Amino acid sequence: MGMQTQQIGTSELRSTRLSYGCMRYLGVWDPAQVTPERIAQSHRAITAAREAGYTLYDHADIYSRGMAETVFGQYLAANPGWRDQIIIATKCGIRFDGDPKPASPHRYDFSKEHILWSCDQSLKRLQTDRIDIYQLHRPDILMDPAEVAEAFAQLYKAGKVKYFGVSNFLPSFVSLLQKFLPDKLLVNQIEVHLGRLDPFVDGTLDQCIAEKITPLSWSPLAGGFLGEGGKVPDKHRRQEVMLKLVQDIDEIARRYGVSRTVMALAWLLKHPSKIIPIVGSSNPEHIRAAVKADEINLDREDWYRLYVSARGEKLP
Image (tube, rainbow, N blue to C red; front, side):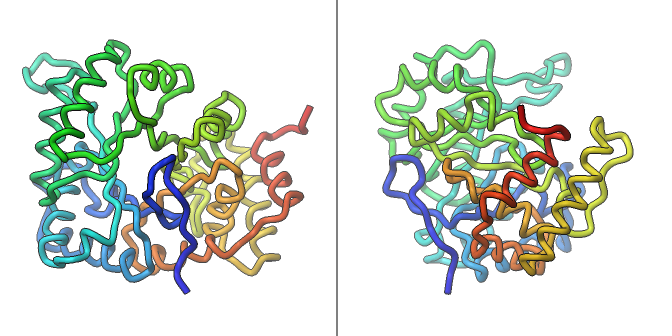
């Protein structure tokens, strides 16, 4: 039996309740360090996700400076027919130091010119004729929503993008952009997990429910320390709270007969906004094991036990 599926936003797209994230599968950010062995490793990870039933694949133009998309495109080319069975999401808008001039700063760029150019580059690297969900990666303070709307309209009319979304947007920024778009934004990809509770109280997830925007959770295991074998960083600003939280996750996970990883993911899946956690491991065994979270229905008491533990203080 495969994973359960859910509607993405207000679209006809349906995704598994877990997504596979391609940011880490090469293991390096510098394209010069991408070896044939690392490419083979990434292809093994994609195969594991494919065989485990994941249908939503998360990308961004900056992941491994474009190489993450490139190796995925190679996999697609080698597996004709699979493209139509999956949903490909990718992102644009982050520009690194030195782009395009040596003195250019790290910044965010939602200019029409950059959005259109970035989309074309992603399409080439992914070796596909369309992107299912195209997202703006991090809020550009200089965003002109009318200009973004023009770019989106041009990409949609050309058949290059089916739907649009955002990433790391607070509710006010989502609302601002939405006012200039004829169609609904589908997703908001945010950092939300037991180590980062802000979206539960800052209006982000409330807006997702109210506007039928699907939240995607990046780094749902807090960079790994909420996962099996993970270790809370020594310099974590809330180290004592996180150490106690990990113990509490382990205790509840044992009762359900699952791993810490599965429990941390199942905790996200419980929320009514229908959060889709993005599993980012490059280990085929871990990719397959995470699917167990789809089968767990955490009861409300256990959900709140972990929420209160993650807060580090009692509810008001």
